[in-house]
Image 1 (cartoon, rainbow, N blue to C red):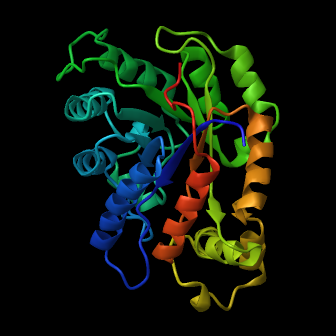
Image 2: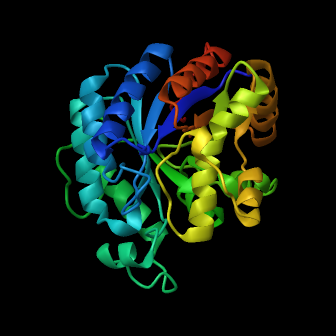
Length: 328
């Protein structure tokens, strides 16, 4: 395995039979374990009104994680910038950087609310009308760097690193503004997307060259069959979301029955990397070589928390000796 950075993305997934508070507690425990295992970074996300996700306020959760850890970098993957004023986001993350200096990263995206009622609650404009994401990102960076019309406080000792969670349009924005990207999903299946980003990249004061992290589910177990079972609860939840419009809490593998043909097809299309340590190392090695990624962001989740902890430990072992994750 080539030496690259390794991080976890934890969306604070809820589980059948557990409370949202349980899910938040598990995220804190997982971050502490990730630090002990030598992970470079721990990301959290922003979701609103989703039954299967308790993570709705990244800045607040990162403050809790900063108090519960001491070394690991902590980041948002991400803050959905259309839901917020750039100044407020800058102030939140500057505050985090003041209490955890050198450990805070800010990833931003542009995803809309999950459903129409959520979008209305967020006071989001007609998604067809669009938002000027590039202008918002540029304004946010100006606030973080102390170059905006007003001075955001507190002033961090150094600018908070800024990342773009990128789809096709996000890649264009990141290239134009000279920012690092975190990519997943369809972008990983488009061999030309990252080439376009790298070719169009305009160096910035904070980022001299293109920088890419790739994000996907990765689950490791003693056997290929056991690892595939670990991926089933998340794949089932995604199938439910696509066929019923509701993204549910994670269920135990034994309770996942009665799939429709369409749902089974969605489950079978899961892009998770699963297998034994040797199998996962081989598949990830090919992915990292193909994308030229500097960091792997494992967005893994499953119902069995003990099995997830074992998977995280096995993945960390594959990446022992990882390089610094800070882009440069």
